[in-house]
Image (tube, rainbow, N blue to C red; front, side, top):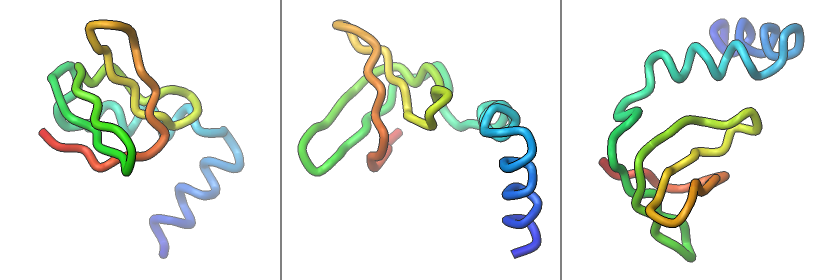
Length: 74
């Protein structure tokens, strides 16, 4: 609860950007090929980033795809 309160205060004060930066600095498999599965789709691509809205962004052969929620497999 203490950690959540700290991040909630940071989010309210500074927005999502600092949390996003800290998360990306520690993200597993950034720049590597991963699989994201939703109830409807499976997307395989290179883990590019988490965008400013919190979507997982994968680079596929066709384009970059923003995925709001998925199970992720390495």
